[in-house]
Length: 211
Image 1 (cartoon, rainbow, N blue to C red):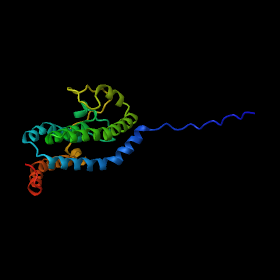
Image 2: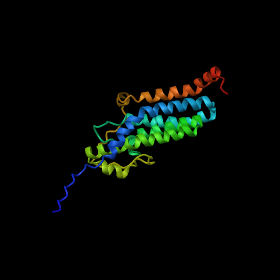
Image 3: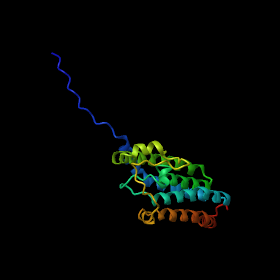
Image 4: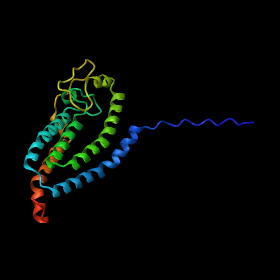
């Protein structure tokens, strides 16, 4: 007699978003060190061009301002923020970070730095955005309608029209800005520009690098 096959137990589906997010958390710090090492290598290899450093401000300063504006409006995990920069893009903080990163790649005129930054942002921010959207969709019923009106990343030029179901209290708050410690981004920008203006001449003087 042929024995009936044992029914196979159903395997739980793989949660790719959670898995990818765990990987992103593990590589975030090593990737940061790799970017810093590449930045120093490129800085030692070639002196920054003053024109490129000046043009980089056209990306870095708007990115810094966008992050500051968003940090002063968002109330994380408490309400769905749809005003201020969130009426133009669902992820103004990440958009601001990308502008700043592109600006520093431009300041160095370095394609390797630009490529590593682009890959790093894709590997880290894609799973983070997916995970955050899953949480917002499960927490705030109005999130799906908000997604239909506001793009995920590239901002729309005009603010999205609000509906009656959304919380409209999105005025910039200095206390929120401080609470989110967004001033650290400004300090980081200042240190990076100081490294462009001061560290490179010091390296050139002590290591006999081309000026």
